[in-house]
Each structure stands twice: as C-alpha cells, then as structure tokens.
Amino acid sequence: MSTTSQCRICDGTVTEFIDFGRQPLSDAFVVPGDEKKEFFFRLATGICESCTMVQLMEEVPRDLMFHEAYPYHSSGSAVMRTHFHELAKRFLTTELTGEDPFIVELGCNDGIMLKAIAEAGVRQLGVEPSGGVADLAAAKGIRVRKDFFEEATAADIRKNDGPADVIYAANTLCHIPYMDSILKGVTTLLGPNGVFVFEDPYLGDIVERTSFDQIYDEHFFFFTARSVQEMARRNGLELVDVERIPVHGGEVRYTLALAGARKPTEAVAELLAWEAERKLSEFATLERFAANVKKVKEDLIALLTKLRAEGKRVVGYGATAKSATVTNFCGITPDLVEFISDTTPAKQGKLSPGQHIPVREYREFADDHPDYALLFAWNHADEIMNAEQAFRDAGGQWIRYVPNVHVS
Ligand code: SAM
Ligand code: TMP
Ligand code: ZN
Image (cartoon, rainbow, N blue to C red; front, side, top):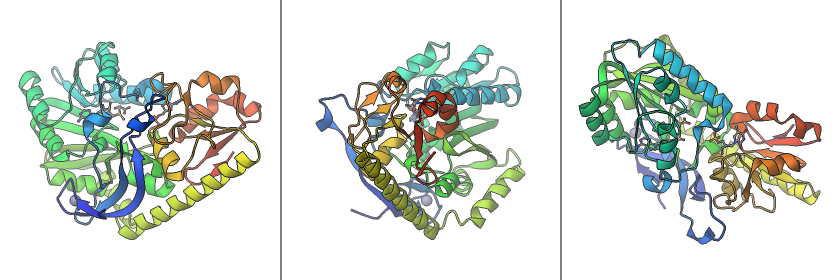
C-alpha cells in the first residue's frame, strides 16, 4: 500500500492525508442474495504537492459506476429542481441570447436542468453515459447522447453541431479522473467567447464542516479556487468567476473561459484570499480535518450503541451515496440502524453497499415512526425536516453528524 500517487492534473506527487480503508461502490445497492459479488477498493484521499488538487488515491473503473442502472435521479429533490430551473433561466437571459445559441451539459442525468432549456426552444445536448437516466431526460424532449464526455466525444459534437456557447456540468466534473481528456474536449468544443461552468462540492465547506461523507468512489476531485485556477491555466483556460452556492452541503460554481477571453471577476480574488487565509491547501489543515473525522466516527458509534442498549429504534433517512462512507467507515450495521428510508424506486428492496442495511420505501418510515432518524441526506436537511413535522409531533428526534454528532 502506497501513501503517494501521481496527480491526475499535473503528474506531481499526491500525498495521502486520510484513509477510509476498504469501501464498496457507493451507489451499488445490493440485491439480496448477491452480497458476495460486491466490488471493493481502498478509499483514501491526498493532496498534490505541486498543483494542490485534492484527489482520491485510487481510481474506480468508470463503467462500474455509470451504467444502465445508475440509481441516482437528480429530480428527486424539490430544492434541486428549483436550483437548476433558476440556473437555466439565468443562462437563457445571459450566455444564450445570441443567434441560435447552443448549450452542452455533461452528466445531464434525468434532464433536471436542460428541461427548461428545451422548453425555451434553445439548442441543447445532454451527454450522459448512464442509460436509464438518459432515457428519462430524452422523454422530457431533451436531445441526449448516451456517452461519456471526453476528447473524442467533444470533437464529434463540434463537427456535428458547431461550437458551444455554454458547456455545463453539475456534480459531474469532480467525478471524472481523466481531466486531461475532458479539458482538451472543452477547448475543442467551446466557442471563442463561450464559458465552461461547473459546480461541485467545495473543499472549503468539507473541511469547515467535517463533511467527510463527500468522499466516496464517484467523487474523485475536491476542488478549490486555487486548484481549479491552476488546472485551467495548464489547459489554455482561465478561471473567470466563482460563486459559493448552498446546495449539497456547500459547493462552488466555477466559470472558465478560453485564456484571455474574459476578465476575471473580483469574486475570484476574494475566494483565493479566503482560501489562503484559512490555509486550505496546507497539509496540516488536512491532517486536522482527518482528526476531526475520527472524532465524528467515535461519537456517532457511541451514540448509536447507547440508543440500541436503551432499546430505541433508529432508522436512516436517505440512502445517499455519501452514506456508504459513513456506514462502512463507522461500522454502522443493520443491528444499529434498522433500515434506511429512501424515495428512489431503484434503491428500494435492496441492501446498502457494504453494510447491507435494508433500503425501504418511505411509507415504512411514515407509517411507523422510529424514535430517531439518522439523517444521511443532511444536504437536504431543510427540505426534509420541514416536511417531517408529523415525525417530530410523534416525539421523533433527528440524529445529525455534520458538522458534529448532535441530536435535535
Ligand atoms: N447533473 C446532475 C445533478 O447535478 O444532479 C447529475 C449528477 S450525477 C451525481 C453525475 C452524473 O455524471 C451521472 O449521471 C453520470 O452518469 C454522469 N457522468 C459520469 N461520467 C461522465 C462523463 N465522462 N461524461 C458525462 N457524464 C458523465
Ligand atoms: P443526494 O444527497 O445524493 O442528493 O441523495 C439524496 C437521497 O435521499 C436520494 O436517494 C433520494 C433520497 N431522498 C429521500 O428519500 N427523501 C427526500 O425527501 C429527499 C430530498 C431525498
Ligand atoms: Zn497536481
């Protein structure tokens, strides 16, 4: 086992700061009886000494994660539907106002963002390798190409459709280790004044909130303004805007343009200064993060063990990909958490990866409220807790572990 690896951005040395050990694929919910077929890998994270990009030490083959049965459906959250609708409206009134504008989205999933673009009659293309969700997007009238975006895909799109005014990716770019190919593709496909906009979980929020469950197989990179600026520079692009956004536990929306095409906003310098002040890219900061993670693990297991000893019922809420890291790293067994309630049909009736906690439909939670709900979908906390007044009225309490273990 090596505690260094080669950086996927600059070939520099990546040094490990946290090791979660053997972990399953976070979205590979297990059909009962298939427990022995699970794929495991070593989940560990390090920082590149040269370009400061934080990344996984080991890569999982993409076809194991993104395939016909990829279970994550973006439209499952009302807050996210509003979030993407607002962004689509913004694109329609800013970047997509020229003659016959064109937008390409990487990882369009079930069409949550492109729906409003298609309805406005603006030329669009979603590039989505996971067949099941791609079909859902196509059923909404969106043009979809079932493919992985990479250099060759981008060249083909440029040949058929011409340059893009906007290339967009939400919660997708950080999933892709082969960044070299992606950024070559982006520079090929982007029009001279086009923008490449992407939003992903922000390392600044992960460190501040100890939200270690953002680390799992699909999240390969953990971006900062500094590492993205460096990544852009190496590939003929420039970071021209950043925006902190509250979704999914804290993200940043980055805007890249071809180098020299646009003037960077004040926000870029401000976020870079904020990161420098917090020493976000320093090894000691990340070691402190790792120590905080260990404390959350100990506190959570102590609480769940105590509740079990008291005979209380605890049910998980939201079989998120993130929960795979929490349950497997902390050792949360079906003995401690009876089942996980989730509204996604593709997850129901299956077992959680690794720990094999049953995933059941929401009705089972609502019909027989437990004493405690362990909020795995903490990134949707406001939406969920507002909707669960009946659970609260029945005396139910929430267990949360971000930024620390607490009951409310
Ligand atoms: N954009 C949606 C959102 O924010 O809710 C979906 C995000 S989902 C977590 C990541 C998506 O990226 C998956 O639907 C997956 O199939 C897709 N994906 C993975 N690799 C890709 C690639 N190389 N090109 C395009 N999409 C990719
Ligand atoms: P995410 O954190 O990756 O967005 O996943 C959220 C998961 O939680 C997804 O499987 C759907 C589920 N979920 C519920 O079961 N109920 C809810 O109210 C919400 C918002 C999500
Ligand atoms: Zn590097």
